[in-house]
Picture 1: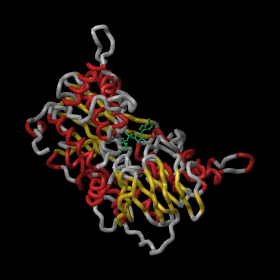
Picture 2 (picture 1 turned 120 degrees about the vertical axis):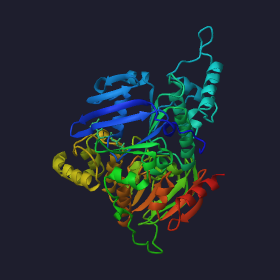
Picture 3 (picture 1 turned 30 degrees about the vertical axis):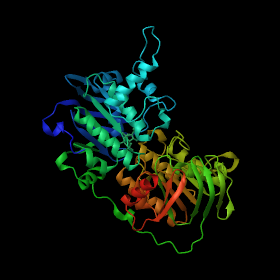
Picture 4 (picture 1 turned 90 degrees about the vertical axis):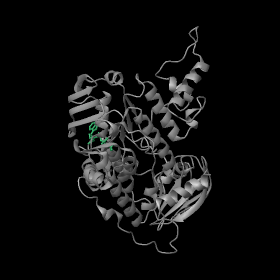
Length: 516
Ligand SMILES: Nc1ncnc2c1ncn2[C@@H]1O[C@H](COP(=O)(O)OP(=O)(O)OP(=O)(O)O)[C@@H](O)[C@H]1O
């Protein structure tokens, strides 16, 4: 990485795209309030900001998929009215976008994925030529140094390589070699450390060729590592822009949260009394890749599940949440739990927040409906009527208690930013005072301030008597949040370590060492 040519630093580089004074309002929210941004050739430009600060809205305005209400976009020599900017304009100007879950096709091969949206290679008779297709794909993979075979099915690749294929596809369609803008929305959010590093060094290479890379992330260590410049949004305005030499952790945090982080969240919890009986026992659990899983989960204890993608972390949580078929013996408060049934799990006091919000429990209704749905008996009145005013009151309290940024309790869940949706879903389950709380990537897409708040909420749930099981690809998060960590390798538990003196590096070492 040290050999990288930093074009941005070497010369006052060309501005490829400039956004000037963008405004965008939604009912009840001003998402962009005069935002300006310059993207230069050869730079990695980090776009940061708390949940709901306007990052996605700015990205959508640049992509033309949700134009700004007003403002100007300057693309090379051409000036566009931002309110009439279209996806075609963005494409023509060489703007490409890769989202957190890239829109690739898992059942197709790498070569097929690279051909979709471009042109399939055809023989002289006009038929699709698969051998030419594979050769063309190989050339793209070589050019962007993506270490996969054109014949591999996308679903068989690691998450990092899937993302790299999506990026290669986006870059290959840019007209001029080594120019244009690539916007990446949290590409490393669910990648383990080593895969994330692989992706970051690829991005540095792509920038050094003269592109501009916009990098949206909540992971500050990555930003410190790769950003040439940073723009921080807060409440729809630019809170600050920093050049490489000015970027440091504390400055970034201060710009993102608008002050100091609240460290109360990190306060110690009372130590767990020795000999506390487990609230949940798991014996011989088998689900997906996970096999022979034995766990004792005690009330008040937060247990982390560490492991690489595909190690079985998510399968274990889904099995205990009743969302996947599974075999084995599980008890909650000494009573056997019927596996494979969400209803049985809920009745036993299990609350499960899956990794992908869309998988389970995301209903595009109002926040009130989403929060009330798991505690409906509280609001039922005689003759089938519902105490709607009571549900709205409770929703308002939860929204303020969890610091959710929303226009009102009647806003649709889909109109909230990603991190705020996550807070609502966590708030929903915590109302039930669960006995077992299962959290898969609980702070995925959540900003640094909200993350501390969510950790405090999770600790409070444990202090209230819940046994908590957390899966995360972020070792920092696990060691900060958990009492102990269980390391999974290829579906089996390979180690169990207390977190008191554990560092994230220790945990990563365990995870990878065991994987060899
Ligand atoms: N379609 C919409 N309707 C109503 N409000 C919206 C809509 N899209 C975004 N908003 C609001 O605009 C604000 C900015 O949201 P945006 O998604 O741009 O934030 P973000 O910085 O990308 O957040 P996150 O880090 O959580 O993804 C938020 O308050 C959000 O609720």
